[in-house]
Image (cartoon, rainbow, N blue to C red; front, side):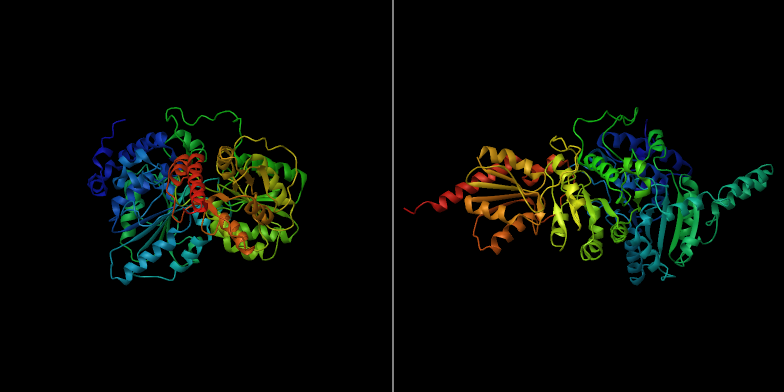
Length: 629
């Protein structure tokens, strides 16, 4: 396809020079380019395909970047990136030294706010709108484009509640991009309410009836079409959903009719108070495979756009997520108290089969991590044994609930924490590197880090059988290929596992870093200990290693500051033991995107890098111990 119009658009000023009548053709070119580009790099496709006309219309009507635009969640912003001068950058999307898959303030002035976690846009946009109001910038808008899934996050509702207090002079436009799907299919009463609005007789039947009545009268039909384009509220001046917040509501409107969107936005721009525009779109729009299966095409690796994603056969090695998915189904069949919860990550957390088999003991609570945790606490109070399947990066949003609602009350909730450690291309916002620090400081909470598939199953069973809060934190992707088994064995709580005995150096591995240390321990004839537990840490194993070795080496796939390595040093300090310790992990900085392998190399977390540093430290210790001449 030749990009006749897209080639002319090297920024928003060029976009605004395009005749309005040509915007639909530009949308088609933009979609075609996006599919071909993401097919090469991988990325979030479905959501961005659904927001093409929306991105075009917003940049066409509003004076961006002076008018601030926020995309929530940011995985719907690829068209926005292409239109704002980053088309060439799409060739290195989500790659090391390339552009981010999400909006980033330091990447472009058009990215008004970083958004990779959901439900933050309305709060940020309201703050910007109020700041502009206080600065006397009477013509400056703040626009939040929020997906219907993100609107289920409690923070979005809190922001709407505050936005309704502000009236004239605060130019806040909230655009609800309603595509009936966040990542997994929609969940909860709010999504059902939105679906009812879009499918109401007022929105569909009445419009079709008016067409049938007026089409035979050409002049009247033209007048009606003109009135429809110029009328902002097609259904009602205020939806019941937003009336409680006292915010003017308009819509729903067709999010793929770019010319109508332009007219609606022009009319809204004349107003002078917080507004909500409800836009109905289709996730995956314009690419048939993504339209048919938007969840499959939500986050994709490279693929052939002419063929689409070809699902391969069952892999020889299961992912950690699959190990969890099989365990949770098996345990639910064994124990009717098990109840599985996920905050909008059914597929990502491995719960598709569980929902099919145990629908009455499964709940997708939508993008509401705080509710997920406290809901689990309530279930535990009622005699159930809840399992919360959640990504490490999203658990951060519910730490208060973990502390006060679960741990403080010592309730038997199991946290299955997926994507612990380096996740790769999604970058700093999604690296699961803070969980060990956050969790190990919480009383009553047991924290486990499996090093392989078998350990994962053993620890999940151990956590579930405990009568207190417990977390099992496992990484993204596949393990080393150890058969997880099908039994329900447990392991002693707080006891490490010595995998190899040697001399001089004791390697203390936490989670998958144990596998990184294994060849180093072999080459240096050192002791290798799979620590298994970050909390309670095996004090005897640590002290024994310190007594019988010249050097302790800890390794974890989490931040070093306050992490598992620090837990080892605390044991030594409390016992009054002065032993040299080397710690490997994540430094005090945010880790940007790249492949997992590239990031391990960059951080010096490969076997070769670890071995070189340990050898250097041993040499330094020998020199320090040598008698002075």
